[in-house]
Image 1: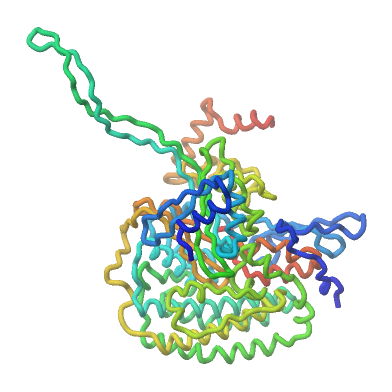
Image 2 (image 1 turned 90 degrees about the vertical axis):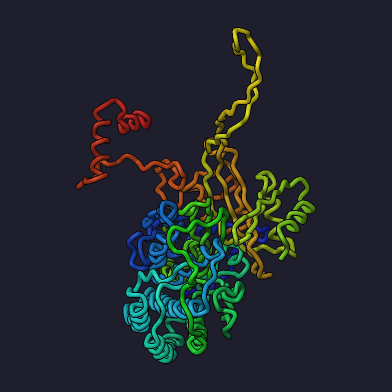
Amino acid sequence: MSSSATDNSISLLRPDGWNRPPVIEPSNDGDLLEVAMGPHHPSTHGVFRMDVALDGERVIRLKPVFGYLHRNHEKLAEGMSYLSSMPFTDRLDYICPMTNNWAYALAVEKLTGQEVPERAQYLRVIVGELTRVQNHASAIGFLIQEMGASGTPLMYAFKAREKILDLFEELTGARMMVNYMRFGGCRVDATPAWLTATRKVVDELPQFVDEFENLLTGNEILMARTQGIGILPAELAVNAGVTGPMLRASGVNYDIRKVDKYGAYDRFKFRVPLGDHGDVYDRFMIRFLEIRESLAILDQALKQIPGGPVMDSKAKLRGFRPKPGEAYGRIEAPKGELGFYLISDGGPNPYRYRIRPPSLINLTILEDMCLGQNVADVVLIFGSVDIVLGEVDR
Amino acid sequence: MKSVEEIKAAIEAAVPGAGVEIQTNPSVSAQHSLRLAPSHAIEVATFLRDDPEMALDFLSNATGVDWPDKEISEKVKVTRTVTKTVDGVEQHLEETVEETTRRIAPGCLEAVYHLYSVAKGHGPVVIRMKTVNRADQVELPSLTPVWRSAEFQEREIFDLFGIVFKGHPDLRRLLMWDEFKDHPMRRDYVDPDDFEYEPTAHDEVLKRAQEHKSREQGTGNRDQKDQAATGL
């Protein structure tokens, strides 16, 4: 089908350790075509530009351009109290507001030493894994859409996402801007009715995953377009700070849920799916497998969830002043490692508030993966990274 | 994982004269950090990455912190000899006076890196470097040649804080546009005075737009100055 799709002769990591993308010489002495893909390209999930230099259809150079959505979230957070930043974290990766809340709450809890009650830990796991399911489902849908299957697979994914967003609405009052977690617990408790509804959704989801997978996985066009495309070697992935499903698709066993055992993750049995080749197909498949593992965690969490309060009674939300010092808290968000780095000077506002955005850092190796590939595959490789611009530009 | 003291000892054994200092973190998280001397930073970073026991192959987070100049006022007791006239007789008396001295503690910019090990599953090890000041000596060695993941993050620090990373392969602004002058994450950053473009000014914005207009009529017109500087 395409000869360049199987052309993996370019070594991405140079042996001397100098980890720059290789320079690819044009095949003839003809002119290069420079294309600005974006900022309004329909595949870019927002406003993002790739400046691409092409030799025929082959990509010779690719420079990502950021900042179209930049609002300096970090500066805003330095001017307000710790709690006031919580609703703003919803707007980072707006597909996964729950995990953003969780990462921020975790960082502040590390800074203050705040304890979280057991039931709140379980609720966090439940909403976090629901978030992962709907994020991965829509990521797969977007990826297929970028391949040219316009609409239908994405709407299948959104059908499942819709059910989860309905659960979020019932629990928190908002579908996307949930503002659910607090330092020392969660804002509201889940009713028994909500847990029953969640159980029903979780029981129905495997059927959806089977159906979705049957439609897509064995598809000949999908395999031809994705296998052997955009290969990311494991060594480079670790060196470039790639995290999440992208890292595991390259075969690196690193899941922060297993490594840090934050929340209640040490109490559940789940496996970490790994890829063999690190190509677009592996990144596509890994998300299916992770959805199945998330459903396994959800099943266990809904069975084991204990009673009790969801907020620490000693928790002080407003006007609290952490001792001077700093803390870095991180979680395994659906897109990768989401971290918050906080410095307190003893005041009511954070002195420094930094977000470690997985979407931005996973794009570091975008050029490496695209070099030597066809321009039509750039869209696909980019889609397999799974980013949200609200988090990239902050 | 090794404690910071052990890591410090290991670094000093491997890189002589590394000049590593421990900065303790008084908060509950107890994530203490190692302050590296910029002159040896690359060697130390390479050691931390390649040492089989540390194996810190994963640079998770790189960020900047701005520490502006601080005015410190201290009360010091000073003993002075005072000449006084007591009962018509001049006497030299020793008197203790409390004086307030003010000094400026010079500020700096700081780069902070959080390292983890994928191979060993431990971390974080926090390393940090300081610039000499905030104005003209803001250079630090780039750690991008050691960990590629610093590439965009150091560009962001350069953009928002103004630390110049020497040895960075592609040091450009990341989030702000190329023509932008200032560094918005610095504590003393002032919003640009561009309120003349505000279409429906009201409240505070109207006040600033009016201030802008009155300044424009005076001598200090920013636009004219800019035009003179750029020769347009």
